[in-house]
Length: 73
Image (cartoon, rainbow, N blue to C red; front, side, top):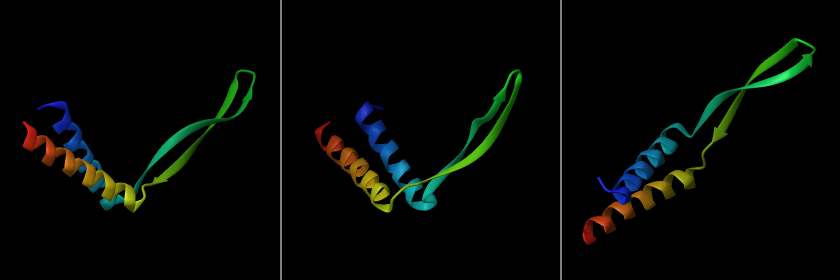
């Protein structure tokens, strides 16, 4: 599998996942207090929303890469 085809498939999958889930969340450890040898950490849950236009754009670009790469070679 050549690199253009791999990028196209990756963009298609990422675009479909972006449309289906609409975003993703992750947990981040943050140091809240550090006093000598004692350290207090807090886990913060962050959410990233993926816009619909980004998902549709990734699908379109991935499809175009697969179609036009398929015609050339």
